[in-house]
Image (cartoon, rainbow, N blue to C red; front, side, top):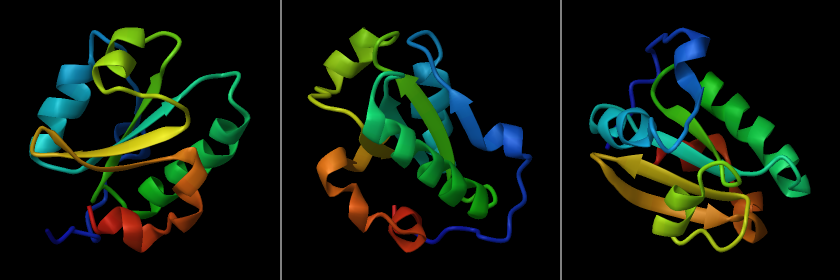
Length: 119
């Protein structure tokens, strides 16, 4: 898959807080046309406070070629359970309605912009 890195989406459209009610629309359906990076996090999670801004910066730099959904696992326990989230932060990439890649906090140091683009 090749990403369109010349697209210019408004910043507000690139990163969304997603709830259980909006997950199907904001992640599964939206991923039919553009990859969606899903960040599973919680307010009390120290590593989440480091990874989240790094992901947001990479998604913003991609200028609409990829979007991001942020899922607070304390508020969306059903989604976290369905996707078998065992620890946070956990990140999944969705494309064409399916999770296609992912990693947990212990391995996020390999995250680079080209890694996100390869989804």
